[in-house]
Image 1 (cartoon, rainbow, N blue to C red):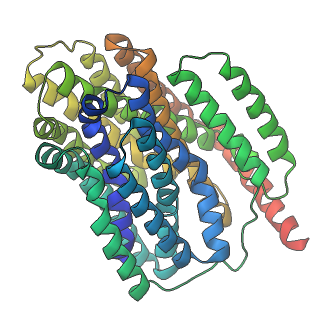
Image 2 (image 1 turned 45 degrees about the vertical axis):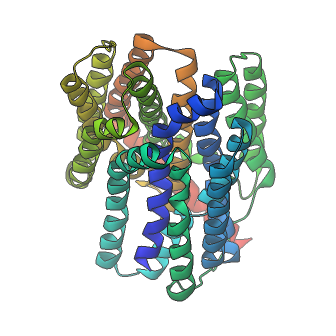
Length: 444
């Protein structure tokens, strides 16, 4: 059962790095402009961000096993259509379909794990295996993608999903038990649509260079806040943001994952476009970054458990800032050893920053709201990746890396502020408010 759930994480996590390595090949074959390459990545991450929470609520209501199998089928069909796409526009549409399936995989798989593994130590081990798969898939993605692209073409990065989906579907049918939530969460369609409008108009304005669209973003955000503050079962409970540690976790996720999204996107174009490295060579150069993430993530998790989130956020944010500042010096003849060092620094920093985000989001929350708080943090990660990729069209060269360095410094500042006495007081005030709301809902 655990292997089955981890297979879904493997394909969805690997997909991000593999597709970035494939972008130069797609651009060369389809003669795609930069904005279309950005949409190949962002249509996927934006759709995930928009549907993650809805998929989780739907699975709780109608059955987690059922939703997981539907997600695997949709993801497989989307992957097949991506490999067959004759034009860049159809490829973007197929990526949208693939993301709909992807949104049903990871949150639902985590729900299955927490439902099946009920004993505390057993569950901790299962979640540990789950976390390790993220690091392994991130490390394998660029190398596997590079070999496939050089051997079989960019279409093969989508073919690899098909046998994995087929195996996961069979194993799910045999081993995964069906489960539903005893108290199904409400679904807020208006809030869902407004959230989608905010995300898509914001990223559309960045990618297509249309500032006027931001007016729609602001209006949609204002209406979203008004509707959610009055809804009995809102898409996002705005009371969460009265806790500064939670609000800072959301901003840290956006800043850190903006850096990751921009790094993966721009580095692939630089290595294969400017330096004319092969896809395999590009994948190997990503290895120091992936290993840095794989090494630091578990260490950071232990540090957070013992000392809190501040040390990890300060050290990780500093490493990311130094790496981004170093990348401002990139030239067409930058030594490979220098690239490897800077990529490794970035990976070490990002791997250190990532674990504290969920811890900050859920700490101090009532147990029955921790899942919703973690879902908001997961959504913020996808929003961050989308924003980072979108920035690559506005900023180029050193200016992009300086902005990413500033965002990393913001991670450090937020990490310090989120652990202040004032921040802890805001956290302490929020939990009773949420508990009162839950009690009132049950009484009603």
